[in-house]
Image 1 (cartoon, rainbow over the protein chains, first blue to last red):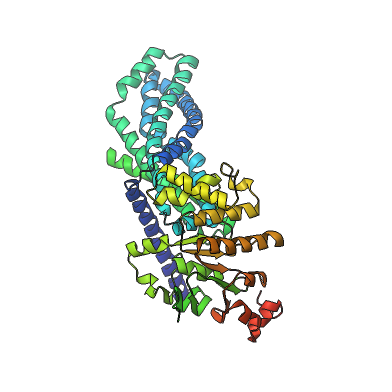
Image 2: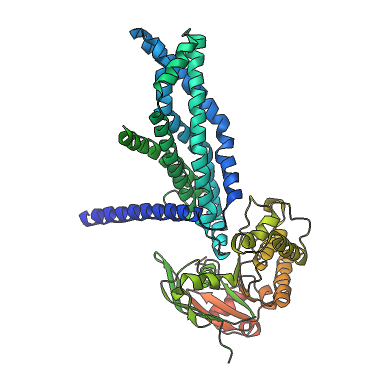
Length: 263
Length: 250
């Protein structure tokens, strides 16, 4: 009984180490092939369109309502201390430092990350990835590398969009609905935000881009190796769920680590 | 005596407790159509994937022109793979690409041909395989038979010297099935490649096969010509060909 338990723990540990190793090798191969000839410019543009441009609407919607809620909550908290004039600072700093990069990454994971994992998972179970190998096409280069570049381009730009729209949302509730002077709101925003805040948010969005793409692409790519969720269509659905859950958890973990390092 | 182009020497492969190949010995000769038959799940596709390196054997060797494939360097393997094309059971066409892009893919990704040269090569294959008018369509818009032709066009566009067919007639009606067999035979004669076909279309596949091997319980239990297999007196072979035998392991 005890031997069996130890054996199971051993198998579990080895399996986890193997899986982590596989993902790291996958990531390094993907990063390496960004720089190998011929450049995959067209594919990068296509994926930037899919990850970036097509996510704009959802990012703007999330951004405006997040900013509006922050404006609302911030106003009723600050008014207790008679410092509702600080609302612009509170909204802008919260968005640029934390909520902007994190919520943008989570929204892109939900919209594009899940689709990527499912698409690659289907490619795996329908032998399209094997077909690439038989044609001497490196599947990691073909599938993963252009998506990393597209994500690295899209994430910071969408984060910036989220921040700007969010600040506008705070202005709508704080100034237009609750009566704070608009000039003061804008003044507080420009006065309190420094370059380090913007850089910090930018660094976070870059890290999240690599984390989300790696997790989503690897989950799809290794669909055939996971056995817990079932094979075939069930395997793809399991990989997609895993991709979204793992990405979201890792976004929050990396957010804490980067914040700790930057402060 | 003719020496084999591809040779399996005591190849073993297991997936956990499932011992798919238990010492396979098989010879495949140049410019011939070789067919591997066997029951569903007997490991025919696994055998085919070992030839092109999609799977690695646990023990034994797969030789190409006498050289062990597993001991080839990366560069040698790359050159070796260029000689092959693989036609998958379910075609493995890329759903998000149109037919032209699917056929052109091996050239656009791996060769240094100009766009014009690629276009010429693809159009030539489209014409030869009689799939004109499909270039801008997507795989989902084609019938099963047309998809097979597209898959074959993609397999042939790189002018390979060896083409591996994994159950090329799965899911086709008898007429289309015979059409695919005839197509393989005529293109093999036209382009002169070595064909290895995994199939359980018996006896139709014998019409085009020059050499037949049967895989049973992880071993090759018969190798010979189509005529020889029809006259074979090994119980497992004759019962399989006649469609009789023990069904308990299905």
